[in-house]
Image 1 (cartoon, helix red, strand yellow):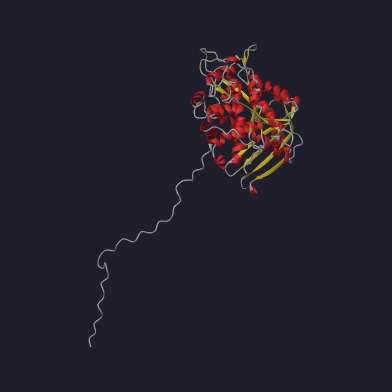
Image 2: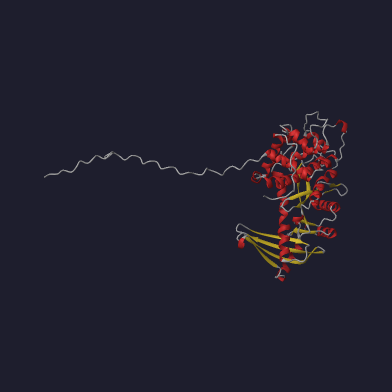
Length: 477
């Protein structure tokens, strides 16, 4: 019996090229780039400035109104505080120039809110219900007619207020000494043709220099409170001024203004000389100044001779867990001659996975132990760079240091003083209020926050019943 196999069903697509494979299901992908940070809240930033000013310096407008005012008051539309707040606002908004601030001074609700800041609101009869903001020419003209020494009292009063609130107690070295950091910088690069008094002429371009003294706060921020112009000229000796001469004038005023303040001066190698050491001894101040071979070659030579004889004066500090971030090695020698006086020298070598650095400091702190040496070097000497960081910020982040805001010499000094007043207000507003209370403020840059504050002053009117700030504290949380 012949049995044939069953017919085989043809395979679909047999004999033809295979079709494309089904596309795989795409895997979820993270978006390219990082998520955007929340934008700064302009109205809240503007409210923070007003709350800080009212809580910390409620007398500020009274201080500004009490400054000498040569105007005929019956013909004045704007109060003295209004004009000075115009200058302060130029720096707080980081406009960079008078014209940039003038461009938007009447935009939106800016006249109403600036009136709330300076205490001259729309109910003032001089405004007739419609507030306005003075122009920068009027502000510069007024600043050029007021005694700079009187205006310079404003930041000193602000610092006295903070000292009375014990704001700087946590930053005192060894629980006693307030750290005052000194440095000089170019205040303005004057236009060609303007002399020292701001008069037009054909002479070469001049530079205005200033010596700044700033007080170190516990948050690592510097609060400028006193300065001395270095562009003065000794007419009797026919010589240009210098930073050390300006320091003598500044130190004399500092001792007169704060006679009982325990001060530790921190400065660069220019101040490592006998006149500065003598002055600190006369005023009962401490000093920690950078020490360099080229500045005091005799003292440096004696240091190298005595260093092998003081092998026990050494200490090591590990950075990070088990020294993973590097280490610091300290050596020190006491009672080295600096001119006719004795000083102590601390050497610090720091190594990290990225770099190696060497520092040397001269100080009149006595009884040196490893703990005291580490505190002197790290909490005083190493903090000298903070004032250079402030100068860099004021020069390159829209504030306008080195920009000529006023060709008149008197007005220029008063503008610089108001720059320091604005800096104190900004430190307290940014770090003591905004970044402590709001997450978006911690993520924003300082320049972005400043511009958001100015936008907030123009966007909407400030509420008349702002809540009080309460206790002024620093830090997140």
